Image (cartoon, rainbow, N blue to C red; front, side):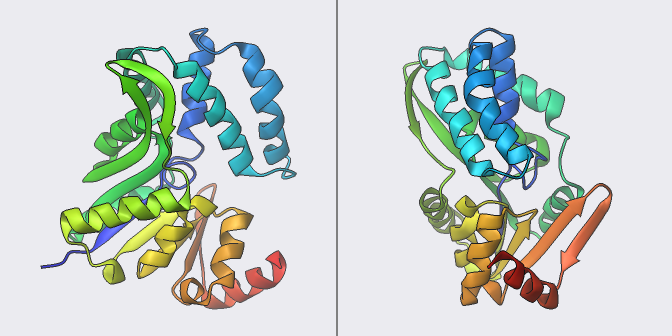
Length: 246
């Protein structure tokens, strides 16, 4: 018998910022990444995004590229320790809407799965903390217990699509009865595959793609959570947004 599933992105969808940024700060604190890397390379991209003049994905990709170099040569136990500490200290900093949806899907008997572009060590900790049945994250390759500097990404649409299809086979999932929650363009393939896609505080790039795709648009829900208010946008609101983003 087929089952329904709910696929959740983490960064910006469940967690209120990016988990990788928290790990990055720890690596700077422990002097694994030089502070200059933050100030000279990452911070300019962050400030562009913070002032709404840049792209959030560019900020994350810049951070990821430095992270790849930083973990090269590190022992698995070091990264796992940092991941555990980050989730212990920051793991509750989540959106109310998404946290409650995880609970609701579990009550419905759905498979609850997270597919995230964050390092798999972080994703594993968040999956355990928030009760996910399974998870997939970016895999930073190891030679024995030492990181090589190579990565198998999970932040792009193609990778997330492949991950979902693996889970479909593993759990006998009916995608037409399933849900997907995401906030950036990397989550778009999840929206194409499921019957109920939900944009959670979406980037301009994601909402533009979603509204231009008639198949996605007609089944799309948009959630915006600000302060202690959750806005559930209707089809009429989506039409207004479409005119704004053109």
